[in-house]
Image (cartoon, rainbow, N blue to C red; front, side):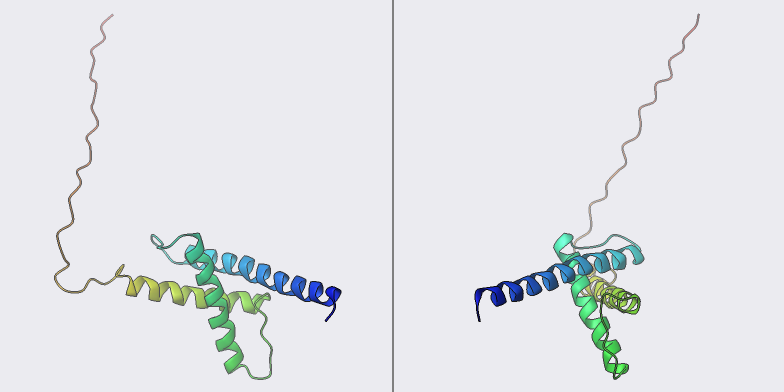
Length: 126
């Protein structure tokens, strides 16, 4: 391999990585937008969830739809990737204890009181 071939190969790999990172971010954000409620995880979790959802969604569709190559950067690829990321987010919430609490619920949560607003009833007579 000469230098030009190595540079071309590196550019192809870099392009693929950036496409997957961008696509994973968009799919992860779509899945978090569809799921109601507070979402656990930050930017990296959204990215990983989107890439994992694309792999799961496109892999399942390719398994059941034989003979077709599924590209994640297509309308059907976007739909199944978002569905895959949505499933990952559901399992993440279930396993993280956001929906179900095991046992007696642990120690009681502190009760926070809302601060009452101080009212100023001044009597201004002219």
